[in-house]
Amino acid sequence: MSKDGINSKDFLIGTLIGGIVGATTALFLAPKSGKELRDDLNTQANVLKEKTDRLATDAKERGTEYVTIAKDKTSELSQLVAEQSNQILDKVKDIKDRAAGKANHVKSEAEDAAADLASEASDVADEAKVRAQEAKSEIEDGIKDVKEKVEQSTKG
Image (cartoon, rainbow, N blue to C red; front, side, top):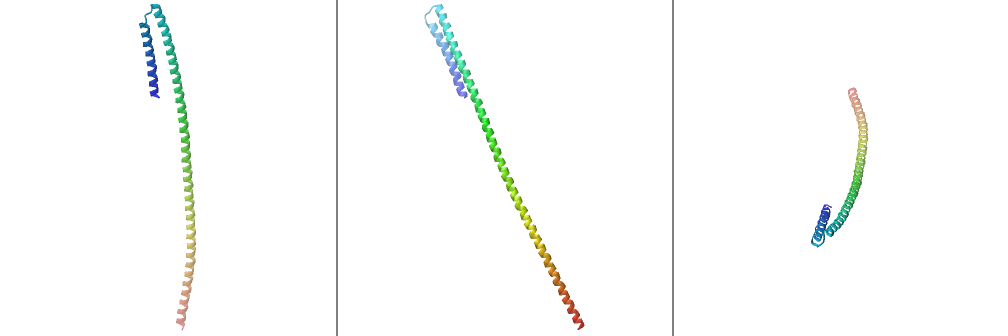
């Protein structure tokens, strides 16, 4: 864009200088009377003024066009950035939700495993109590038998 601006500027300056030099040269080299020369200079000045006005108007229009284009591009870029920001936020939220879901699943499985282990430990403890009671009964029965045998052997 700056290259186009420089080329347009150079073109305008070249046109203006070329027009002035050409008009001045033509007027001074043509053999005319003073009044005719003044009239020609006046006419050429008016033509030059019109060209300058046209070039100035064109430059203003191009400047306005460039401003409009810049505003449009800025608006487009802003909109694109906003859209992409929203997409990124949505992806981050989705990842966060999936991670939370996986964490809850792992927590639930850990709680289930802990409950299973607690139940199994309770079953093992109950079985140990039963076996201990059976062992106690067997020992008591064994003591009774030994006691009876001792009593019989002392009586007999």
